Length: 293
DNA sequence: CATGAGCGG
Image 1 (tube, rainbow, N blue to C red):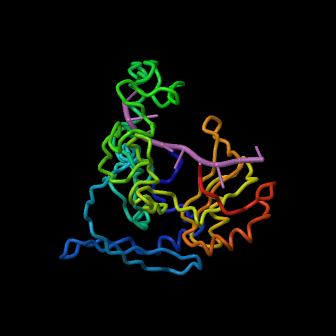
Image 2 (image 1 turned 30 degrees about the vertical axis):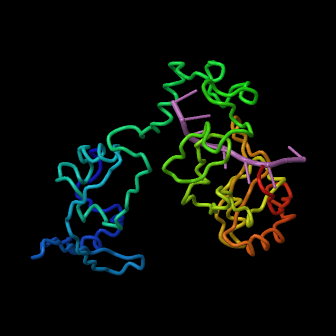
Image 3 (image 1 turned 30 degrees about the horizontal axis):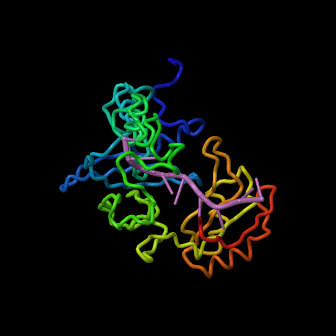
């Protein structure tokens, strides 16, 4: 490494030493308002000398920073920067746009990604074998019980029987305020909740998915991806949802998907245009979805 | 071929 000249200020100096050295040195001055003005000189693509004036405000904005980046900043400087003060210097570093680091949801400085607490609790419960079926006391959830269709959970009067009063055996509905489906469970799936992205509508005390502008697409390749399908359908209007059915085990597409549009008229056009359209070695069939069972 | 997943403990 000793062979590298310590006097060189730029890799581009090779063969143009006279021009390069003719450039004035960068100047930094501090203004009254605390900002700094940086003047640098360089040669542009056409070999013309350019003076650049930048005014920067040295406000330190505290924000999350990738731990790996933070660590890297502690490294001793090397090469032309060896021994110099921390931070960028205009003769070796070109100041660019601020790049906003946008941490992922759950990102935590100084450590691993935060785990979903629900996942944790569930895994924990499974590990300790605390799951006990309320019907048969087996180590599965009540809803997974092989007897769930024929027996009610212990302590509940015949769930699903017609002679049941409106409040008998019915749990209090949660603060989400959605009327759940009849059947005794207070659980309201995310897409049916108030404010869910894909317009649920209150009808007769129940939330139902609005499938008026939903297309069912069949003959979809197992290698299909939701994003690609969305791109394809976006050409005909605003797509509000793409659901690509996948096998939960293998994660391979099952061969059909649903695409919802904001406007039914767009769905009509997409249906007409894309029915019979080739996508990845297969020819799509596109029709309007019927109500889900 | 094919009408979605989802919680819960």
